[in-house]
Every structure is written in C-alpha cells, then in structure tokens.
Length: 418
Image (cartoon, rainbow, N blue to C red; front, side, top):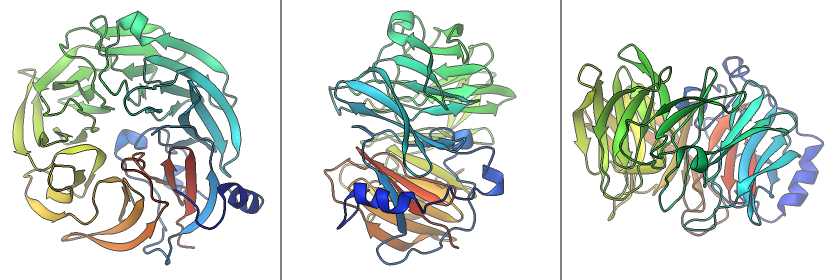
C-alpha cells in the first residue's frame, strides 16, 4: 500500500493529469462494486482482460490517496466514485473520491472507536444514489452519494439497545429493495430493517437470542424464501427479508468471540467459520424444522475475517489456526482437501479473471492462478512493511484496477492486460 522512493503526494500530482477513468467491463458497468465484496457479496469481480502475471515489482501504481483516516474500511465503487471510511481525530469520517484519487467530499459519522483495535470498520454501501454506513458504536447514517449531503441517521443503541463486543460493531450493511438490513444485536432489535429513504423502522426481529458478532451477512434465496443469512456471537441465522421472521437457526459457538466471516452460499448450502481453532463448517438449512444440518466440519479451516471464495465448486480461504496459518482449497460439498499451503500466511482475498488476489496482513501482495490442483503463485510484490494486521482491508479488483487500503493510504494499481 505504499510507494517506495517517492512520496504518495508526488505520485498523485504526477499521474492526476494523465490517468483516465478506466473502461469497465460490459458486465460491470451497471453493477459497479457497490458494497463490501461486490455485487451479491460473492467477492468475485466481473472484470476480464486482466494481467495474467505482473511485471517485476508489481503492476503500475496509478495513484495514492493518503488521507483516508485511521481504520480498516475497504472500498466501494459506483457511479464514477470510490467510497471508504476512516477516523480523523475523534470522528469517524465517510469519504468519496473521484476515479483519479481526488477527494470529492468528506462527512462525519459519529465518534471514532478508540478502544480495542481503534479505527473504522465498515465499508460504505452504495444503492440508488445513496450511501449507507454504520460506525462502530451504532450510528447508522445515509448520505447523498454525489454530494455527501446527510439524508438521515439512526442511533441503533437508543432505538434497539444495540449490543456489541470488544471490537465494536463491524457490519457492512446490506440494502435489499427498499430496506437497509442490519444486526444491532440488541434485545429490542437483534436484526432490523429500515426504510432506505427515511431510516424508519420497517420490521424488528427479537426472536434471536444472541447479540451481534462482527459478521457482514448475505441475502440469498434458500428453500424458496429470500433471507438474510448472518452470524450472531453464538449462532448462524436466516431471517426473512420481507417479514423479519426467523426462518432457521443453528448453534455456532466459537472458541474466540469473533464470528466475523461473511457466509458463503450456494444451492442451499452455507459455509461459516471462525478463527482460533473454531473451525469451518458447511451446513444445510432445513426450513421445515427451522434448523440446519451439519454436512461437514473441519477444525483446521478456522477462517476468521480474511474472506472465503467459492470458485467452480471449490472453496478457498485463509485459516488462522494457532500453530500454523494456511491458505486452503477444499471441495465445497465434501470438505476434502485439494491443496493446503503455509507460505502465504494470513491473507485477505478477492477473485477476478481466473486469478485470486491475496494480500498478506503484513504487506505482501500475491497473484494466484486457479488450477486443477488448487492454485499456483504466479506473481508477487512487496508493499511497505507494517505492523501485524495493518493490511486487513480486503483487496478489490474492479474496472481494471487493484485497490489496496492500509490505514491512511489507498493505492490504485493498473492491472489491465492492454
């Protein structure tokens, strides 16, 4: 995430006049990358025509913006703008940049998180010209995406008695139709739906027993019911997005109170995981019994917050088990190992054009070619070394660019083949 031998400010000045907004692939023009893990939260980019290998030293750096603020927020990309969030002094700030890395606007969203692992958490969510963002202490705000004009705010603590753990609230909210879906985790609202235009409460679920974890859920149709699938501190749940009814739930009690991984869904099956030897588990929800059956469980696939990918029936992710971090590829339906490797370390991942982009938490960026045997590392470059867990924001590939966020810095690299 850093520039060697030249300051980020100089790089920005040198390229600002010449960098053009990249051509977006046909399938991605309308969709953009509007939220955490992109359209449908599959973490799979629609981009094509990207570099299959990188030159020595990595792809060309287009620009660096170095005033993002402190934190771990990723980027959303929509309507010719880039959105992220970070802490400035004692305030959480939501930012919009143009495609050349120039600041368009910056707006506060409540107080900064200054306790365990201080800094911003959530990536803003774009929908229908508006931007939605939850700060770590439960202030959910909506902004006009083009101007940054505040539209509405909801204090999830006062309205729903929101409850959060040692690392605060870290959810990337989902907008589905006219609803903003989120998990305050409070006794007056475990999971709620708000009107995206006004912030008015549309429904509240109080059936769920446990408080919020750090999970950013997905919306999927399972058993004929469109539902939000997410994790609490001690369970995985499916909630009807129209009514707020709890459709099914299953225990998932972690060894460490994290439950941060975004679930992976396909054909009625859900993969969930948590770190520190809690393991990874494939479950199949059963709406008739309002529960879920475990298909397989592996303690060593204890993926925490690095993200997991499903590509052609194969599950890829980064296990963080004490005693040996490993990158894995397993069969989704059976859990059978295809490949395990301990050389990449703990990585955050995304996928585009037959390649996995893997960002090590200390600053090594690797390009992995998906193969019948799992993957091959084809390229690698080093970012500026930082303390452990500095590079926790997941990389994003969209519009022919690779975006890497590390604390104050956001870097944009050109990864187009031509």
